[in-house]
Every structure is written in structure tokens, then in C-alpha cells.
Amino acid sequence: MPLVVKTEDFTETAERVFVSVPLNGVHSSKADIYANDSYIKINFPPFFYEADLLHQVDTEDSEAVVGDGCVKFNLRKVEDKLWRSLKPDAGELSAEEMKTRRADAFKRDHERVEKQKKEKAIKKREEHYRLIQEQLNVERAEKAKFEHARLEEQRAAEEGIQQWKDAMASKKSIQATPVRNAERTVSSKAISNVAKVDSAIFDTDKVEEETIESNTQIPVEAIEEESDDDDIDMEAIKAKVRKEMDKLKGSKPQPRETGTINFTFTSRGLIPTSTARESEDVKWVHRINQAYEKDAKSRRDNLFDPLSVDEKNPIFLKDKGNAFFKTGNYQGAINAYTAALDLDPQFSSCLSNRAVCHLKLGAYNECIQDCTLALSVTNQEHEILSDRDSVAAMSAKPAHDAVQVKVYVRRAAALNLLGRVSDAVKDYEKAIALDPRNDELKEDLARLTEQ
Image 1 (cartoon, rainbow, N blue to C red):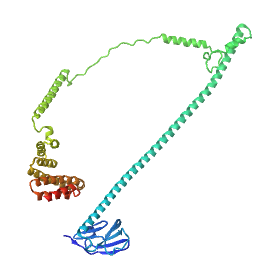
Image 2 (tube, helix red, strand yellow):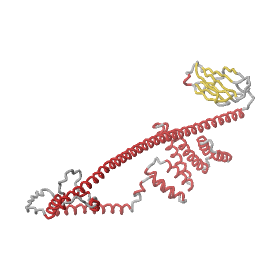
Image 3 (cartoon, rainbow, N blue to C red):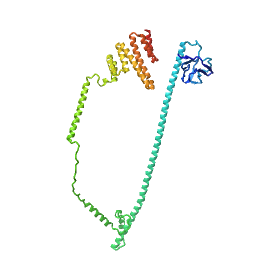
């Protein structure tokens, strides 16, 4: 039993309450402090201090400081007024009223903590969404930046191509102008030459206007470009070119000389012949057929094996038992659960489910045995998990408690049916201790105690 400390220093103002509790030499690290709006408590083994406050305080604006060998509470009053004392006067509240007052205070504090958790979770989720949105905005900005750079590069490339096209068009126009001038120059020279020839042959210097005009239409192809020599005979050149082309067209290549190519084949050595390969293929086909026959024989033999394939899987057997239970075949379910437990004796859910089947069939002692074994197995599993990973064990605690509650209730039902009411009450009390908010359990316990 702890030693209860009943002394404290109490001072107050209209707005705040100041309480100092000595630690009696105990190190401050061993002090465990709890406070809600109507109750404060300090556990510093072997000592213990608690106080029911006269009025409510605001826990959000209150604090407790450990140091200098004591615990100092700085509590904000809900109503700004003087209390005159820290606790209610003796006899002002009955034990039941004090218990109810504490329970209400604990409930309000629990609701406050749960509300803070929810608000914190909402705030965390909103912050997460905000960060995601900021990341998306950054990515959109980067994408827009890259898109703008790409468009700028595309525009610069298009401008460069357009400039190149304009330059080429300008160059072509510049080159076309001298060609046309050259055509006019060549035509005038040809007319002058024709006039000279006519004058020499016919001994006349007169040339008809129509002849001159017709001679101005001499095609440019008949005149060598950039030629300033009037004595070049274009017809002779063309005749020579035609002659060379005719030679090329009429000539045919000489046929290639015939010859002989000799091949030398290497020895096959260790390479199997077609006959050897066929023999090897026959061997492999025979082996494959033997494997097929062996597998088929194994399947035929397993048809008469009561524990073939899935029957050797405890999870499959558990599911099979559940299916039997749903159809009301409790004995079939017991057989399936028993087969699963033969494979895995620590399968706690099969123990619990088999206990229900025994209860349905009126085998109350077997039900009690299975429930007791299931409780032992589940406790061992939880202890092993706690030794390996305490965090995982804390997470699995609600599920573990729920399983134990069901097993306790089933064992209590069997005990009650055997007339062992006191033992059934104990099991119900253990179940309620694990699930104190279960009103149905409390109602069942009340009905059981009335018997």
C-alpha cells in the first residue's frame, strides 16, 4: 500500500490556484502526474497524493512543474473568484457523489483528449494536402517554364528557317536577272551573225525586218552559256555528242569467264547423326511419359487419402469447419476443427470455434476445456509478441482482448448451464474488465447474479 501524502501548500488569486506538494526526498524523475478539471494526482512511490478540487479549472491554461524537491501546480480557474480552500469540506459530498464527480471529470478529460487527437489528425491531414498542393503548384510552374522555353526555341527555329528561305529566294532572284540579260545578249549576237552571213552570200546589206524579227526567237539551248567566241560551231558539237551516245547504246559488256569453285567439308567428329538424335528424342519422350504416368498414379492414390492436398492445410480445415457450422452441422464442424488442431495444436481460433460447437451440442465440459486452452494459447501468443515487439503488441492488444472476451463469455455460458454460477460470474467480470463499455455484458451479469 502506498503512503498517502495529505499535506500541501495552497495559495490563490481571483484567477489562479497555486498548489505545492513535497516529494519527501523522492527523485523528480519518478513522479507521475495526472490532472483534469476537478482532480489532481501525483504518484511517486512509495508515496501517493490526490486532491478533489473545490471548483473546476481550465486544464488548457494550467501547468505542473517538478523541481526543488516538490511538484508545483499553477491552475487557471474557470470562474474568477476566491475558493478559500483547495478541497471540498469533509462531509460536504458523500462517497458516491465524490465517485460520480471523479467519473464525470475523467470522462470530460477523455473527451477533451480525443477531441485534441481528432483536431491534430485533421490539422495533419490538411497540412499534408497543403504540402501536396504546393508540390503540384511547383511542378506546374516548372512545367510552364519548360513549355515556355520550348515555345521560345521553336519560335527562334521557325524565324531562322524563314530567314534562310528569304535569303534563298533573294539569291535566286539575283541569279535569274543576269540569265535573262544573257539571253537577250545571245539573241542579239545571233541576229548580228545571221546578218553578216546573208550579206556575204547574197552580196547585199539589206535585211528584211521580218527576217530580223523571226531570228530573234532563236532558242537559248542552241547557244553555249557564257560564250563570247562567235566562231564556235554548235551543230558540230551536238553531232559529236550524239555519235558518242550512239556508241554507248550499241555496245554490250563482254560475258565473264567461267571457272570452278572447290569445297572441302570438315569431319563431323562427335556431332550426332540424325539417327543418334532420333534415338535421344525417343529416350526423352519415354521419360516424359513415365513422369506423366507417375503423376496420374499419385493423383489416383490420393483420391482415397483422407488428408490429401487441401486437407493437410489447417486454414482450409478451419474454413471448412466454419462452413459446416453455418449450415448447422456442428459435429462436422467439430471434426474439421479437430483435424486442423491435429496439424496445428496452437490454432486458438479453432479451439474457440470448437468450444461453440460443443456448447451447441450440450457437451459443456468439452466446451470449458477448449475455452481454457484457447485463453492460455492467446495469452502465450501475446506475451511472445510483447517480448519481440512491444509496439506491435500494443497495436494487437484490442484484438487480443476482443478474442478473450468471447472465450470468457462462452465458458461462462457452459459453467452456468452446469450450475456453476459463481464461476460463470467470475468469467463475466473478467470479460467486463477487458471491455468495460459493453452494456450487454453488464446486463447478462446482472441477470446471472439475480439467479
